[in-house]
Length: 212
Image (spheres, rainbow, N blue to C red):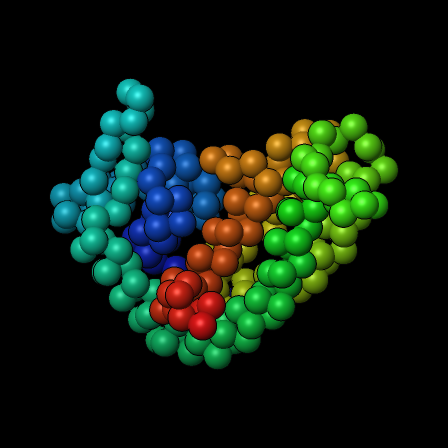
């Protein structure tokens, strides 16, 4: 049976994925109740695990070094105690095989290479070109969701990613083109980046060693 994660683990992980965020941003990562997240954040503030920063009049939360370190320990204990390390490792390796296709897809969405090799920004006036990219996304998503299914079987906290990806794709299909690559919003690429970071954090892998 899939294991349910500790609320503090999920809040600390959400802060790590977001870098910093408002209460609603933190809650949305694992679809947690806002009141629960607020309670956990208050405790983390009192314990010195996170801080509040005022950004343009908006309160945003950020992990302290202590909070990041203790969050990593919670992640390590979770997958070791649940015996899910090997299955998450396999899912991570499958995800890595999909990652180049996603990166190329995002590049092609932003830049068009003409027949003579010249590059230009995609102004999205060529509907057939954009449709081709979105068809590739749908195909890639079918493979991605197989990975997510295995992850959710291991840990329940992975269950929210499919809905987040689906929501971004639906927005794209409705013509809201920012929902593929635009940063600082829950675009498809943002959620992809967060899933990648989630897997790295859960397995205790840093990006530098991954590249190596």
